[in-house]
Image 1 (cartoon, rainbow, N blue to C red):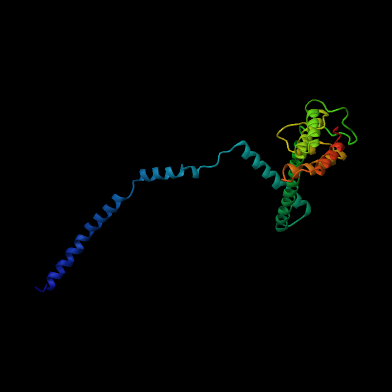
Image 2 (image 1 turned 135 degrees about the vertical axis):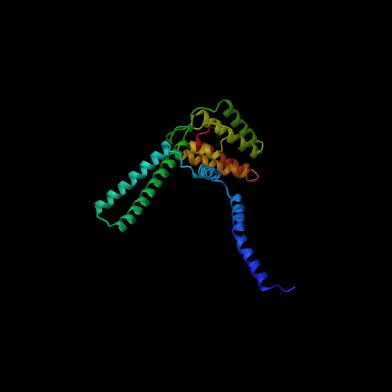
Length: 240
């Protein structure tokens, strides 16, 4: 059936008349999905009270840092005013001064740390003695026994054993003389640093130059190695 003009007009009028009611229905549905004012305030309060929105606590350390920054800025501004620099040049000059101060501070810290480490390395070491001091008297106790064993091993052709006994005998004898402090955990290099600088320390290094290749380098000990090590021990003042 084909609609007449009157029918179309009636339909249009009905639509217009019903529009305000439909609009009110849509608005009611939209309002139902929105939070209330109280809920909005509660959500905002939760956000603002989160840890990331809280100011940093004021501590004595932060106060000191703020005061140091203030003094730094005042000092730099005073220098800029004394030199009569413009604002732009003053900013550049301030950065240059801060850089120089940072370098100087780093050098001071480095010097202090180096001095502390150097002094700590000397703790527990025997005091320096004159290089012309010699070990007097015959070797006794454990030192004498080790040196006697070294002589016996060398006489029998056991040069490697003789060199090991000589190394221990020399250490124990130097310990008895107060030139080093014997400890099993120490290395030969540490004993060398305890000895006074000069001929005695050079003799110790010469003795190690003969002993280390045999003890740690896998070389076969020979009479020449033994004689060289024994001669260096003489320079240390270790008796025969």
